[in-house]
Length: 249
Image (cartoon, rainbow, N blue to C red; front, side, top):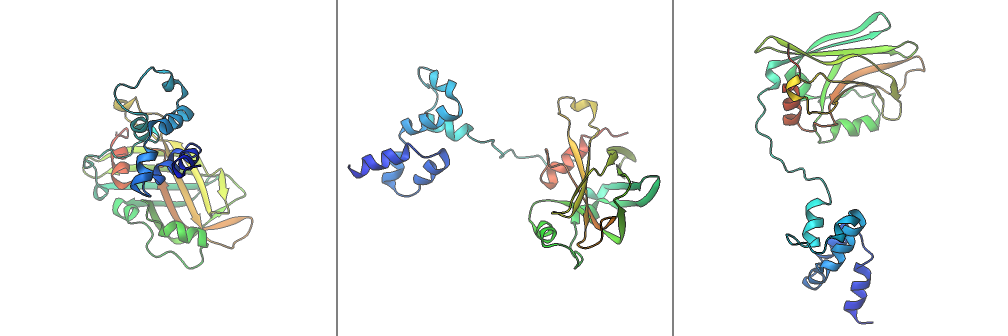
């Protein structure tokens, strides 16, 4: 079998990502892999109904696959109207009826994250703290004990120093999930979005308590707090835009 025929047989068996990788090998492979027949096969796997059209007048199957095979994340955000310098976060954690943690956290502190984690943390958490993705975190000093024998809840309000308004992020959410493999206790609540943005779906705000290795089955030693909105906001600007859309009162 000629070499070209072998390549065509192999290309027909590949998925879209591997087929696209083959296009970077050489000009010969690129010209061959751009054959619209291969990309029609790829489109047929994802969107069988599109192949029932008699023709694609506006684009080739290659362009169709290239345009829609994954969600595009290249939207450019305008600079947010909020900044962390004008924000304060009010965090209260209860074990039953007992208040075990209460603090006003200035926005820049949450934004800066945990620069010097304690020594007695797991390697899993160490990797998490060193990862480059954006995280809102603060170190808890001194650390506090979280009892596991009773319900533990958290509430978070955020205030704007420029307008003296408040908004609710988390209300009385329970730490129902203790993940000992990642050394995190997690709670979430649907955040209060302004009625101006009714089109937004239910967006969850998450609070994670980061705890140290060791301890016993009755309590964990918390050294840090993380808040995120990973359903929709994964960068600093996205978080600030989301906070701007809260129901400020």
